[in-house]
Length: 223
Image 1 (tube, helix red, strand yellow):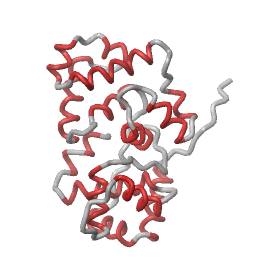
Image 2 (cartoon, one colour; image 1 turned 90 degrees about the horizontal axis):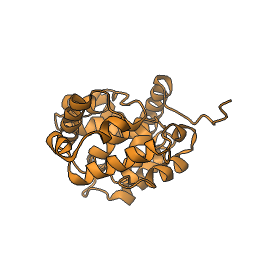
Image 3 (cartoon, helix red, strand yellow; image 1 turned 60 degrees about the vertical axis):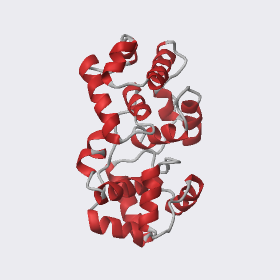
Image 4 (cartoon, helix red, strand yellow; image 1 turned 180 degrees about the vertical axis):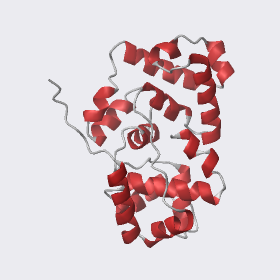
């Protein structure tokens, strides 16, 4: 018998509910949607592949991470812990992996195979528990953990701390002179509880559309 506790998860219905509530509460988010429309409900299936993609996305452009990920999939087909560990250093370099990120994802894959890290168990943990469990793995920091919770586990009230695109979107929409730092952006985001993950999608959509990148960035990356 599976006694795992089900955690809140965004669905098409609750995503629409979050959009409706946020636009009523925040005129700046409403203005973003008025200009560019509702954001897509970006998401990926949870698992090793999704965590690997988020790690690849650390501190690089979405386009760069996506290109590397697509090359990786063209080599291994179905990405799994086993198929990733079967690749040698040269094969990973040829797909665009840095030595550091190859090491991080190899470590994650080995933890999974050894039974030291249970990805499926994350779904039954609350946000703080899942975040801490992810961050216990080498190479997974706060942004990576939060982004996985938001995109793969579809938690409704997760905010990816330190995300520069979100900070720049806040600066523009809130008409601030400076880009808010991580702490300030997090403080501003608190007004969007319990729908911070929905607000993040609005802001990403706004940021990318303002730069003419929407169709080639998150739409391809997180779907």
